[in-house]
Image (cartoon, rainbow over all chains, first blue to last red; front, side, top):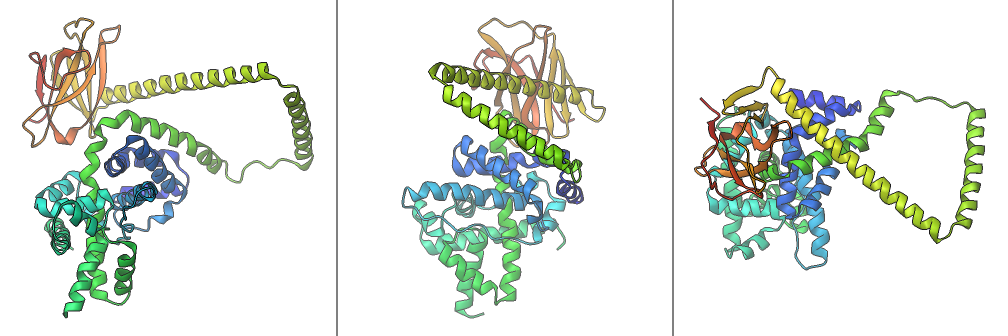
Length: 177
Length: 261
């Protein structure tokens, strides 16, 4: 985390080399989210460009916490905008943006590599992970998730909540909060 | 805790997961404004939800060239800003020079207007050809610069004293940071219908994953950057396959190299 803070200080001072380091480190995460949500590499490319230009033009919009999780959220929200524009032509209702988080991820990120986070995700039972990932990457509401996986609405709500709690617990086991 | 609060707790969790419609999200926000316990719960769950994106990070592996292209475009876009920042307040132009510049701009505008009036279809065609030529030159420059950038990265990896090296028949596998490179020479020749193909085994998998195909350059050397992460790759192999690559090895590999001792 400390080196991220130092890099962000440099980006605020308009240091292109620091920006490049951040791009090298996080562009795969940003592109991966965008391409999975949009299913289209060209639009995902636009999202990557928007997210990193936002980072360059307004680095102060990151107000602490886990930088990767923040980038993931703004990427998801940006991709959701594209999905909303597409959905206007259809009738599907999309979920609201991901809310801002504060500092648990601060604690997590300083200790965890992407691999550990993926491992924690893999440990969640499929029946819980599926609706969570559908919500995150599909940008759809829990009602729509319930319809798609043909599961009662109440069950979907319970599974999303239980999966997130399990993920929090799994990450907490490794980090003293 | 009453039943109503339990419903709100569930709403807060769904809000953290980003799966509420806007009207319900507004309800969750309203409750969060009043309930400290739910605020604390939400803060943690929302942070965890943000990390779900890591599930898709590997999806970018096959788009390395695209990511390099985006990077170059971004660096070009921010380049001006970065340069202006290093100039500090910038250079002030005296008023008489500004006036001269304005006069020149006015004269140039008049001249351009005159040319525009005289322009005919031939001129327009010439302009079009010129634009195409510029685009073509730009694309060539992009492609050359990209190739140069990749070569520099690959060379830097090979000479970096911190990089981990795994000798293989015909060269080296180099792990620098989390990137993997092949630096190979003296591989058996291939016919014009065949190429070398890379295979990698991700940690935890049992099946080799097909990777990029490549050829030696005219000097008999190949530098290849792999999209796979070094930290998540346990074996790298190379075999000779049909020119366009194969979903599964069809020949005995030239080498199979475990990356961990």
